[in-house]
Length: 175
Image 1 (cartoon, rainbow, N blue to C red):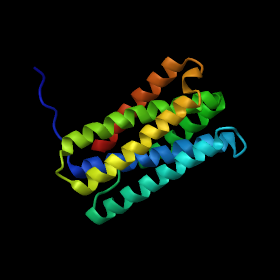
Image 2: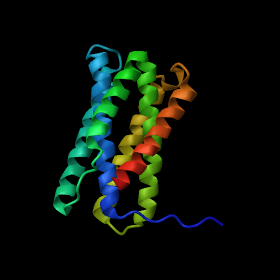
Image 3: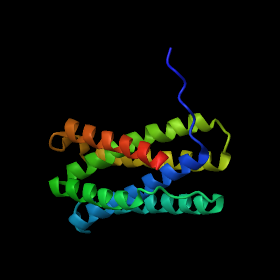
């Protein structure tokens, strides 16, 4: 029998979720900087980036209303996100989509866990997370349909990105 995991506070959830959406906007900015607006997937990437920007703006507003501070790691996620997006786009369109698929898989798991932890205790935050989770699942499915699994060394690339995402989540919850 395993020990029950502690339920993070709504403030911590909000902080990490805003950080994740911020990081996503930076990843897509890096991908678009490399792909430009003429690449076959640039319209899909731009559409996903716009949704992530909306998610971030809505989390920003809720944080301001509740007096929740952002993660102190935001400058790190600014650079790391852009670098990850640019690097995967430089490898090729399938690698950029592999990045999206890997991250969105972890975010789906993260948001699902948060909804279980909230268990209706914060309807406003829960509704946002549920809506955003649906968008993230759509992003993952779009990336898979666009050839994410054809990326060079897909299992390794996906695994490394998912591990990095889990680490970023843990750090952003606490710092």
